[in-house]
Length: 125
Image (cartoon, rainbow, N blue to C red):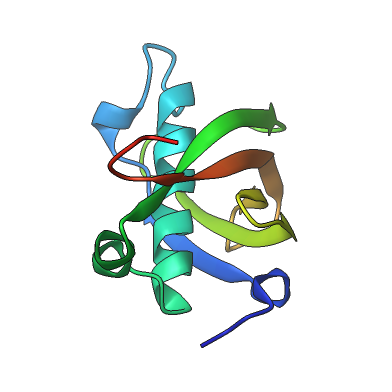
């Protein structure tokens, strides 16, 4: 199992669906967060911490703070690569970074950070 998660960069590719876009044809803000969550969950499972593993240990991570910087819009049917890595890891806190890019040009279209907090699933603390 990987113990230094800051060394692991995980990436996942998504195709933007029509229902994920706003009236201007841009990917909705909330959808960026969904893509971040899916990528983070897959990154965690990739190093041995799947949803089932967290259920087994009786703890889970929740997002305390999210910051997103939008550089270029994403549109319906665009392909986006989301890369993530843990920048800082403490006993009950984790800072995770994200980059959104177009895989055909490597153009950076957004970057983000989430501050995660580790909680006991029963007590919520």
